[in-house]
Image (cartoon, rainbow, N blue to C red):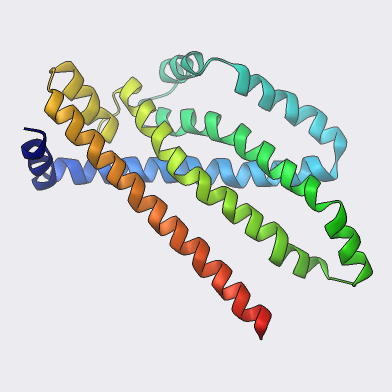
Length: 212
């Protein structure tokens, strides 16, 4: 019956619309958290006073129970944007700490080597900062989808994979529940595939430029 439920979902237009909106929300949460974390980590790295303000905020968000954040966001915001905000609160502290740690590591031997061999800042960014940021981004994309779907279930967001899971649970349709889960896993795999292709294409291009 799970197989029949999968076929039924694949044939329905509702699933494709739900998958598209979920993927869009997941990407929006990922993009906002990634860009803001990179910017604030760079500022924190350069200005210690700024770091003293941002780091405690991230620590508070990380230690706050996830369910508390979810319930507060659902009460305050509409179900359409709640999943994006919830995913952001989970992704941002992780990305911020990863970027800050990476920038701190680059400060040591790599900067000393760059000074000795007179490596330009542009080259340093191109071969160290940007690849590090891209690796972090690839790791966060599929995680963003997981968080977004969970938030959609809690907020019963219309036109979403989370809503399909929620309705299957309410109607006690175990086969539908498993079918939607399997298709969500496939969607996550597709996002991972394209993210990996983008990363490999970037590093291949940089390697070709380096040889030239």
